[in-house]
Length: 346
Ligand SMILES: [Zn+2]
Image (tube, rainbow, N blue to C red; front, side, top):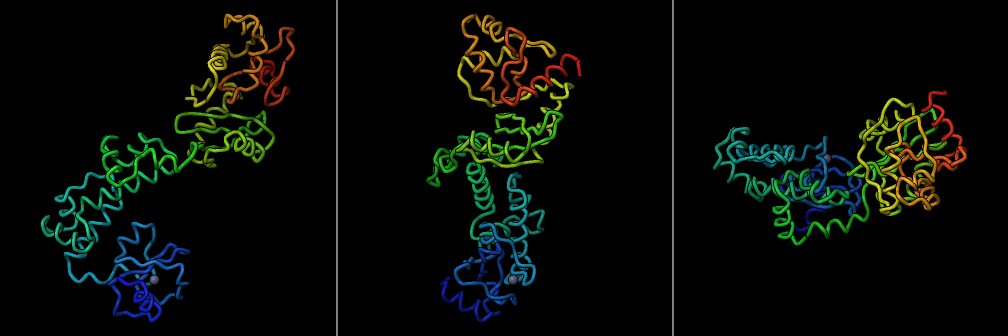
């Protein structure tokens, strides 16, 4: 197909070329038949595809006005092939067999195989595999791990994915490099101590912070994870965030998975803090002693001050030896209120 001839047909709304190609418009993400009555798009926004199938695979939707797919298919078998392609597009993870597809679109398997190849250009199986590969690379670009992307794309085993993507000249690791850093989803919830921001990777909670307003908390999150792709997600994060927020009010000891980086020492301190019962406190010196490092009280205080997940790691339960509050990353008055509530004083 020559682009200049195709463009001439679009400019003239040449209905005799309907069914021989479609044109797609990058600004609207819609594809049309050449004779579509809608306003002519700018040439530099137009690309051409042999049929709607390829346009949809490239992410375009069919025009509701000119219905570009309702033409050019002269017989029942060709329409059946397009319906079969639509079935695969709607559920590329289904283990479609030729027999099942043929049954669904009401033609014989051998007939479908032939017509599908002629109309679509590849076999049903190749078409399904191409859609799965596309989904797999999309997941990787979004920052998913290889194993998760493998699962999401419906592949049985990673080795098969490697085989296929290597065949395409693209290793999963190479795709991954195109998405630097992790994907972090976050949401904010109101609590009696202020606004709480809860953020998580696909492995677990990576940040819990408390502050006066959601905007500032989101800015701090971005500053803390400069290379990550941050996504505000009030829907998928809601359940996790509210279970963490309930810890503020004291009616849950949420056992949430964590994805937190720390030194071996920080983790020793953090694990120990997680064993301090609700309603009680320890001094920095006492924690250091429990670690077998009695002179490390200041290092313990630093580990508390760098705790990335408020409440989940209860650094608020560590106070000075003289009983005064000591510091708190999210404000000493919040620490006081938390401890008073945990002691049943509020
Ligand atoms: Zn149209």
